[in-house]
Length: 402
Ligand code: APR
Ligand code: PHB
Image (cartoon, rainbow, N blue to C red; front, side, top):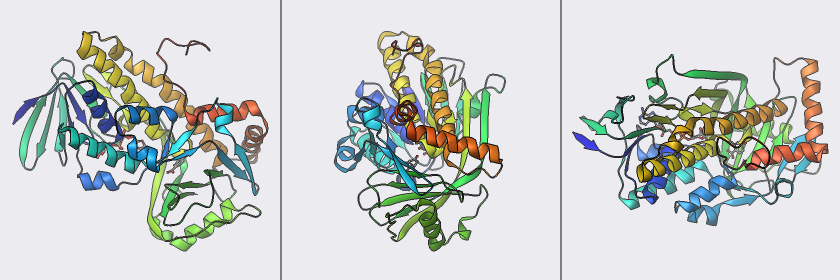
């Protein structure tokens, strides 16, 4: 079976689905191929902090309605250590910018519903996906679905197939450069059927390990604790998780409300970047090209920034034939990717207990926390990165060139 489209999108995570919506809005055709089932991708629990820019793009493509109704706008975060809380008033420090708390799972549901409504192709359970003829302007994606082999010819392939996808591996090894760091810890996350015990997120540094109190709504809390990198979820009864949350989040006069645990899982932490993000007619976006540890809440937002820039380049390419936007795609994305890499590493090292650290390292960590909580300039830098820097062109290098 053979068919043709303008853009073949591999992967229906937030990156692939949003790119499909952006292209459709500009009258461009795409086919989205996803390895898993609809039920599977709509049930996966992932992150939930959206930068202002992410919120704007979702509204622009017409999937912002439920987010605007159910999402929670937050204008600050708390850093907690030594039993005291320090508020970082992000909006005040960034000229009024804020973040939206709305689960990635909900965004995926909204984008899938939107795609099906537009009638544009979204194919689930596609197996044995391969990409080929990448050096030509007529690349092809081959896959099998329901026992039938398919060939999808196109002009451009968007590799939005996540960290474990096939697209990144199709770039020749002598072209692809990879930077990677593994951390000596992981996050155990729970989703709990209980209203949050805080109005804004609490990031806690504690000698027994990092803890985070986040939320999905005014009725559902999302909480995390730092665990060993190879820890087994079977070691963690619900009560053991709550006990650690109580210990690490403890603060005078503050109480943590417990509730039934709806989901519990362990996520490894790594930093990863693949360069370049383009090879011929293949463009990588989102987790396919880069991973950040979740402490800075940047993973989803980076994926959205990538496809926003890719969408702009493709609209220009199919509209006027100019490939200027596509030419600068990789460099433009990577500037933002490396900023997010640094910020995520910074938040991670400032807040986690590193078993390999010495006393000197622990003193540095404490000094950094004190600085962020006592200097307006340091807090403003954290806030600016957390709410998200504006998208810039690759040529903007100096302050004021935005
Ligand atoms: N063929 C088709 N689809 C594939 C293949 C393949 N060979 N391999 C993986 N996929 C699918 C996955 O099943 C998944 O649905 O690609 C999708 C990739 O989605 P995500 O992993 O969610 O990645 P991305 O869309 O880049 O989203 C960015 O931000 O919060 C972070 O890591 C979090 O997923 C999040 C990411
Ligand atoms: C989440 O709510 O899942 C979450 C929030 C903040 C983070 C990471 C994850 O930094």
